[in-house]
Length: 288
Image 1 (cartoon, rainbow, N blue to C red):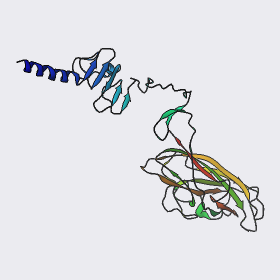
Image 2: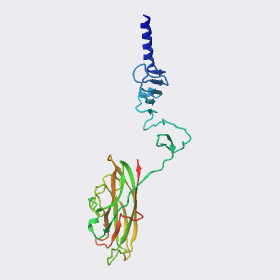
Image 3: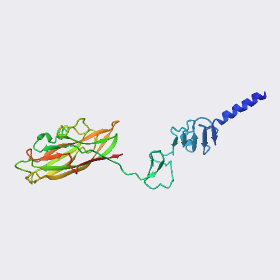
Image 4: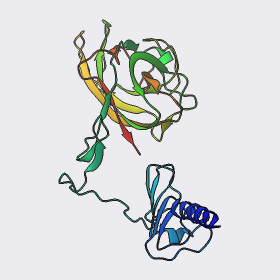
């Protein structure tokens, strides 16, 4: 009889101590503290009741403000999108306003100011855009015409991006007998395309459908211009916003054309447009 009593007592102790509850008779893990002693005697505590709880599960997951953590440490502060509540504080001497928590290669974390990272594109080959060639003319009803390729590009991972472009326009009269007069002008546009196999001067190519908002960057070029091979210069500067909503990195080529002009027979050309001029830059920043 004594042996049965002893065995029963041992099994009872094992069962009793397989889960430890403090301020609760209903522990939901191997170690559970109910700070406000407001949990029910049976069943899962409500979301509000869990707010003062601390728990360790058999998996080793630790929860603060939740009794069902899905990670090694999960904190639920009780905040919402409209009424957020900070759930974490680290005071290690590196903390300061507007710093972010970053890690080293071993996962050791500290506070640090974050610099906005810029991604740089590659400037390749351009082409000579002849102003009297109607193939480059802008068609407001069909953007798949009028734009021709360069091998200048930028590779962007999935996400939202602001792409900044600086593009030199170098006009010369292409050895013609005439040049731009003071009444002559032309409008040149540039954009990005994700069409595969783009070549310098090839096309026409369509702008990528990943662009959001502004589709083109442009500049109006006004005469007069010299009657010589020495160029007259202008710049296109601006930014385009795009969303790579695929699952992989995409290549976006610079395409140029979409010319609107004061006369169909304007003399001259844009020399090596989109090519290797020192002023040409393509860069991008990740945005929200």
